[in-house]
Image (cartoon, rainbow, N blue to C red; front, side, top):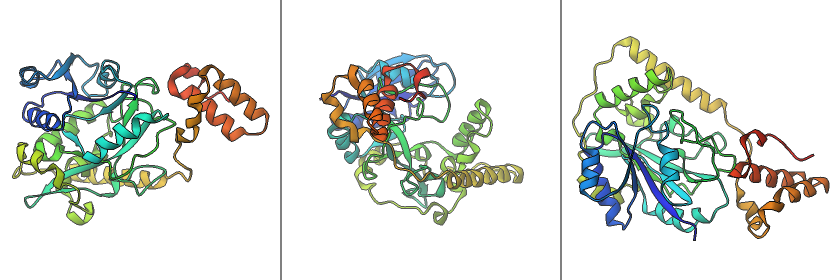
Length: 337
């Protein structure tokens, strides 16, 4: 059975990292933490005191994708990585799926559903706002994030608001009920989240205002969010253990800032709607029989199939051999003649 590891990049998470680690350990799971050496709080000490599996790391920029994803993946000692942030947690269905189905895949990666949680009148909901449905080919899929990947089948990048690697060609969708939850808006005050938006905007202008309905859900009503709470009961013990910010108020925004936020959120929604692609999600599951063909013969087989008129299958095999990590990036766009 191919190996699997949960990798968690973390920085300044002392308020909640212990509660999440408890929840993992109750499930018999020991994730590996990649701890940013620039943490200003007791994150590293808490994890060390708990004998957590961790590696300190100094990243190249002020965001997790600046090296932490690749470093964690390459040092986890596993073929498959389920990367989750320090304020996220997997459902039982997701854990069952990645360990029984996902790790057997020939795909480069899998996208899975994330439920962004927020508070309203003392209750916890998840958002189904338009911005959460961003998959270009399957617009009805909630919160697609490519968080499960094979270490050697992706090209890593250091760029904010990415999964830490280039968008894979072979990256289908896991079942939507195999989801994970995002607790950012439960754990950080609106003022802290607003500061996070501003920090990201300094790194890359106009990269994060468009996500204000995710970072500051309190700016929008339940109708806008199409808010739901089904499926959250299994996290009740975790929620009870978390330092949830039940009564924190929104910071004061001037009209100019609110106009900018609303404009960028609307622009992002329009961009999502206009970028829908009418083609199937590429999956390597149709090529599972390649396991029985020596890899050194894959290109020859692709060329032979194209010569015989089976160009679709030949190109699929060619693309998979290139994109799954066995050849250099410069060859990606070449096709057999």
